[in-house]
Length: 486
Image (cartoon, rainbow, N blue to C red; front, side, top):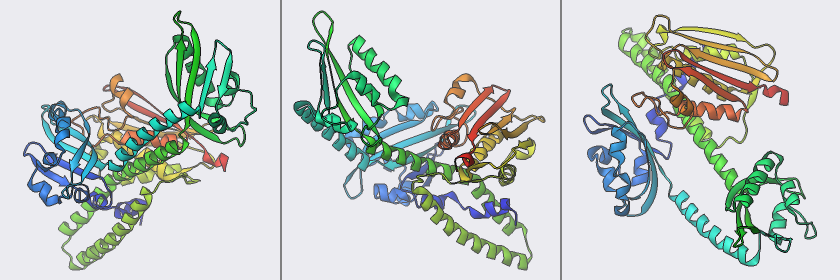
């Protein structure tokens, strides 16, 4: 059995995937004003079942906290204009508990510009809101304590030419109590990649007499470890406008930043899998359905039934895989890549996508030597870009998609070129933004290219796009050869 067929048989209906995630996914037909889909997570989040939401389309409004109902007042106008809506507000759970939720609603307009459908995702942010409130309170109390006790503080008095570093600040930088305090010494402890920027911002702040709120990395003097500091700096001038004092408070936020980065990676993987699996899942579903309808031979139908049962087992394994993927990957998995085979698998996996047969697809893969990369990431990058090229093709007998790859001094360069609808400059500048859709009437949630950029960055590569309306687009990806670091 070919890899493409195995890939199609591996995936199942996306509704089953939604049963295992905490976010609520929904879609509403705005022409008939009825709920098309509501994932089972709604009961965990709201306390109400799918049936209750489907039976009462206004239930989501009714459970909003009375003090927060004003937050959604402008939603209808935004959606009717084809703009995505983002809200955070409180709801009253069926058990009377109050929760914070965050919702994103994406509109779909028809050719006449009328709203025909909305899709969205809702997540519970109660814990995050509680943590934020605690952090704000803690930071305020900590700042007051540091200011009063001069812990984590420094003070530069330009009248007396005295510079003071508190013991807390010295601990942050990993220096002893007899380490000479000076501006030059402070700058020298900042990470080399951040040093010029911090120096410029501080000197500009001192010149203009403003305050500064900045985050940057330092290299501890005692153990060489890298920490991330959040610094609030204030300036004081005399009546003549002369700078007489600079003082500031610094706090180590390394743990918070690491947690934020892991959350971002986790969200990216969830979006990546749900986005990438849609095409193959639908293909597999369609093939099984067509076979069951068109085949009359009883023996063949028996085999189809056995295939379907085996397929269900694979589905269960996929659920386990999805749960594993939801766990944060701290590192990428590098392996030797057969790029030509990877591209061929992707093309075959999309053979059921509408419009592919109307496009001339050509490949020119000239990659010599061993190339190492994360196979899953690379597959998703090429898959999303190729799928987009098909989606935004023009109805022309000369439509084409070209996939080229060649070696560079440090890795490979991949170009995916089409002569489709193209993009203007405004769309091109936002095309990698999360949830951005250049055309509000287009299908999809606007996650594909956002995911592509995140994956390229995780591979320490770069991606650029050149495009002109009605002439097409060319995406250029440069990836390092991870084998050189093994």
